[in-house]
Length: 518
Image (tube, rainbow, N blue to C red; front, side, top):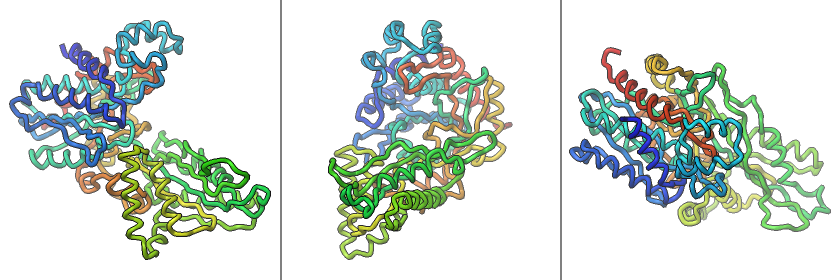
C-alpha cells in the first residue's frame, strides 16, 4: 500500500542526517538519485532525471529531479528540500534524533510539554529530525511519483528536491535555469507547484498557504568618534547610536505590511554589538547590527529609504542625549561605494575585495551577514572617511514576497477550492516562515536595482536568475502533512496525515489540474 511505502521512504530519509549548509547533504542526494534511477520509468527514460549542480557551491550540492511525462503537457511540480536543521536541541538524545522508533522510546523517559507527552502516548505520530520538516512530505511525493510513473496516462509530474533550504536557499536559487530548461526542452506547462512543507491545524482545519512572505536583512554599520572615556563629550559612542536605531525600528508596526486579516511581524533585530577587538578605556570606533524585515508588498527600495531615515533619526537622538555637538551622516552602501569609486586605485581594491569575500565564504565558511559587514568595513576604510557615519546595506538571503493569486488571478482559486473538498482546510495568503516558493515567480513591479546596488555580496557570491524568475511565474500551494514542533526536539509528523491523507490529496490535485474541462 501507498501508506507503507511513504513511511518506508520517510524513515530511510530521516536516517540520513543531512544538516543544512554542510557536505552531509550529499549523502541524502545520493539516496534520492538512486531511488529515482531505480524506478522502471527512469530506467527507460534516464535523461528525465538527474542531479543539477548548484552553481559555485563549495560543498558540491545538487538539486535532485525527476520528470515523468504523461500524455498532457500540463505539469504539477512536487517541490521540497532534503536538508534539515541541526540535532543540537536534542541534547543527550542527539545520537538517536534520526531514528524514529528508538527516539520515541527514549522520549518516554524525558520531561516533555503536556501536548507532546500526550502525543507520545497516542502512537499516532512519527518522531525525529526531519520527519516533519520535511522528509515526510518528500517521501509522500516520491511514493505518489513512483506509483504514477508505472502508467503515466494523464499529465506530467516534475519532482525536485533542493539543498540548503534551511539556510540560504542555494539549491532553489540555482535550479531556476533547470526549471526553465526542462520547460523549454519538453514544452511542458507548469500549472502548479505543491510544496509539502508541514502544515499546522487550527480549529480542526489544516492551514495551507497560497503565498510566501518576503524577507530582507538590512545591515547597519555605525562609525562614531573614539575618545578616552574621560573625554566622552568630545566623542561619539557608536554603541549608543546603534541602540537608538534599534529602538527606532524594533517592533515598529507602522512598517508592517497588511493584507486582509494577515500582517507581517515588525522588524526584529537578531545581532548587535561593538566592533572593538578587546577592552580598553575608550569608546569603540564602530558598532554594527542586522535585523529581519518581512514584507508582503514593500520593495527593497522602500525598505532601504525607510531604514536610512530611521538610522538618521536614531543617530540624532543619540547625539542629542550625549550633547557632543557632532553631526552624523546616514547613507546607503551604494552611496558609500560611489565615494570609493572616485579613488584612482578603486578597480584593484574592488577586485581584491571580491576575491577575499569569495575566500571567506568558501574557505572560512563565514555566513553572508558576516561577509557583508566585513565588506562594508573594508569599503569604508578605503574611502578614508573618518567622520561619524551610519551605513546601511542588505545581506543575503533575500526572499521576494510571492502570492499565487497575484500571479495567475482568480483561476488559481479553483485549485484552492478543490483542495477544500478533499479535507478541511483554511487557506492563508502568506506563509510567514520563509520558503523556497519565493523563487517561483516575480512581482511585475519588482525592481532589482536597489537590492543589487546595496548588497555587497550580490554577483558571484549570491544571485539568482532574474530573467528565469520573471518568466516562470508558477503558482503554488504549501500543502503538506500535519506536523508539530519543527526544529525542536519534539518534532513529529502525524502518521495518518502523512501516509493516507497527503498521498491521496496529491493524486487528486494532480488529476484536477490535468483535467482539461476545469
